[in-house]
Image (tube, rainbow, N blue to C red; front, side, top):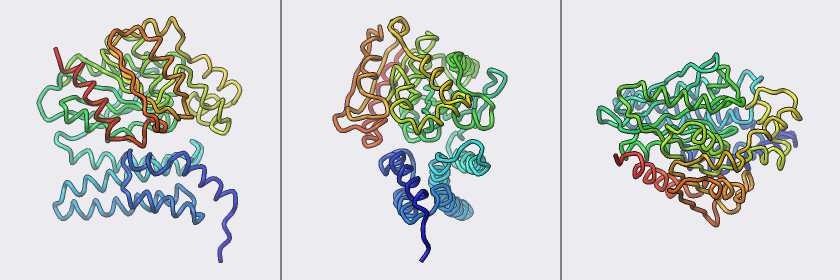
Length: 363
């Protein structure tokens, strides 16, 4: 009988807590894959290797379906493969070569699924800050989309994780830019950009890029999840071309997460590109929305939060909502909602999609 290292089992249990079933399922993983990933982790298989095996199997299913002419089935399996690679790479440090290998598999699988959309999903780059912001552009079937929503994630939940929510926006006639902001995903791993004090300028570059695309209208919204909620609100403060802002599971002070859970400090170091933990936390602590900042948050605002959220406390999301000067602002709180409302995906996605449609599609 093979003995499993206690440290590996402990690490896998931590990964399961960070990526529980509701998060895996609500953000794109197929049920059987999610169950098997957790089971293999319980048996002592390294998390990323179990996820890689599942992703490879799903990609093979996708290729077989495509060869048989079943394009919709192929798209579904490519998306499932991308989800496996995406959740699998989360625990790996940037210095681990397997992380970038898995991330390239993720990009490839998601891109192959995107090619089977109508119109196809586009892999886009936006020059900024001496590097490249990376994203996926999803457009509705009509020729010109009247409005676009920029969607961003947080410390480690990056753009593809929000594809399910993007589909709800797409169905309502909105274009979507699934973006990796500085410090996130492909933008960090391959674009060379980390999060700095000027990050709102990166969002302004995205807004300008959207405005320069003749297929997209000039109305822009932003939807941020977790840390991304803070980034989205900050962007809306800085750039009044942003006409609507949704903050899901966000905060006025993102340093609260690594302060409360010191083991997550590495996420802050990677996000910021600062190797010293104390310096990273000091700098992250300076990235906060104060009263004067929130007084300039004037566009329509939707804040979604779960009461028991322990990543970003509900009180800090409430402070963002209360401090905003928006005349049109809506607060939604779920008494049993976990972080980013992973356990209420349909209600979360439809609430946000309807809200954006009401505010961006009406002249």
